[in-house]
Length: 113
Image (cartoon, rainbow, N blue to C red; front, side, top):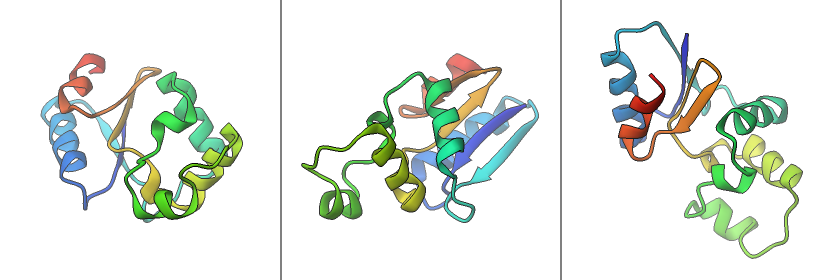
């Protein structure tokens, strides 16, 4: 089953959801803003995406700029920041059959469907 980590307030995330829906495959939407991910879940996603934790951070978010920008942070600290402030997580994230992508640009989602 396809999983999409989604923020409905984000246009790019809504576009990603439309791409997943158009695939006509079973999917699950995870609203990570209403139901924040814990550090373990974030680590699992980062492993599937095969990226560094910092690559999952939205660095233009106000909370990142005011609280974290310019600081030396461990991977664990970055994961904790995302767990505490879900808005910091890039979106959408689509995972299918142990492969995953950040759906920016949206066409990247097609690579794993």
